[in-house]
Image (cartoon, rainbow over all chains, first blue to last red; front, side, top):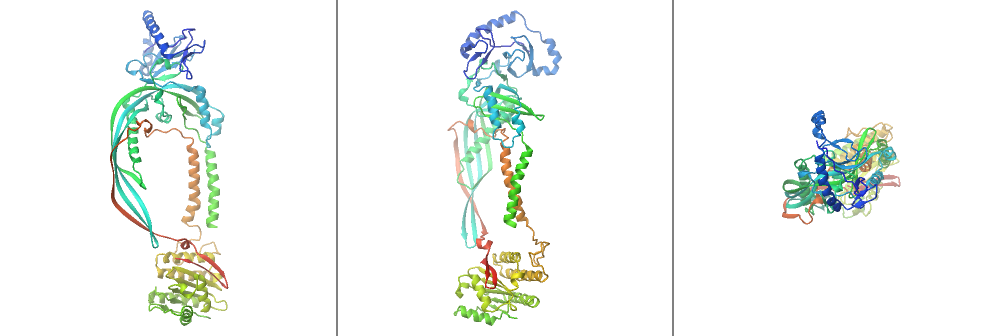
Length: 362
Length: 274
């Protein structure tokens, strides 16, 4: 298991650096210095080479015994040593950036973004933790059936900024669809209303290009939760640099391109059929009778996208919320006050039924 | 006892319209006058016999008159015309002229029901509703004989209930309809659907929409945001007509759904269209 850890230290005071969402720079919370990402990376390159040399000169951590004890679980774990306080830490195999629970030092777990695992892009955080907490409180508002105790007691247990790995798929979807459509016209003939329904076989065929359809590549992140915080503004994508990661958690992908492609394919196929259906106009009804959809698959990109994850537990059940850290879109299902639901239901039903009974029958 | 004699009605018709002539198919009985000729002799005689039987049993006249067009007699309102018929023909039994008249004007599909004397007591509003509904169901489909039969059957039933001291509508324990064993005075399936189903639906929709506010997590089905703008290419586009179908639904006009109620001058009744 790798044991080497990269962390960014302030050249002025040696304190840990973190990526600041508001300034887009690396920030030292101890001396207040800030550094441009690209300039800092250049200055770090030579220092990294020296450190690597020094690391080789001084030998490596012997983790062979520890690995044997973990048995089969070892393949799902990573161990590393915090370069700031020396604590030996274990994290999941997919964890790429985290912080030390003892000293709070922000660290990048080595090897996670090496070679073909290195992301093509990263979308930097734009919104901070305070914005996430505020968005959650706003998320509670205006929900009539939300359990009041849930919102009042403010149960947020954990707020984490996470760079979630995504596959971004390019491609073209081509479809050939037949619809059964009808129009209706009515006329009066004596005592009868005569309705004439005209039936049509509507044929549409066409194609559309897609760019960067996102599918989250982390098993830990629920797919529907990640879908729900879309869309991201790809105009702000940056070439990947580890300098954006300090201060946040980051996972490497643990769902392969092949596993993710099914979801991207399905979304693209549904979209082209829906777009063709939208061109069928002027009919009273329209339903699909036959369709053939083909996909021309293009490039796949690997990107880290910024998400604030908020956890809470209430009445023994976990509630997970996610906020798009670029746009501020907050999602997450909330618990219902069932007593209030049924009271409201009865409150509408009973007087309405009584009124109709009186109006129609008495 | 006053009876409804055809010669009397024929004289009345002559008064109303000097040019009137009774068609060859017309039936003239003591209780049934089919001036417009829409019944066969056998049908008219069956109805006549049933009315005669009721007259003998209940001392109550159940009359049926059909004409081509009531306006031929100088009236603007079919009910007024029917009342004039009733009074000038001296229909009904006893000092109070107890009786009931169904007056049908065929060309403009108008009808009037006139109740006099004991008719006001025996034929309650509920009873009149039931009679009218059963009768009009047939008339709307041009089923004349069965409509008149409903009129006779319901009249007989309502008279019998009244003779037993419980006119229909006075007793909630249930009344028997001679032509519909399943008839029930309580709310029918349609009424239950209205005053239970509609509130259930409205409550469900309102509460459902409010409950859906709590659910914001959904798996994405489409990727429309990621379609390249302007890249949609339509390769084939055709709309081919294949065939046409036609459905016909009988129109129930407002007057079909209800009738005008009348009272005064010793009579009460209803009128409307069929």
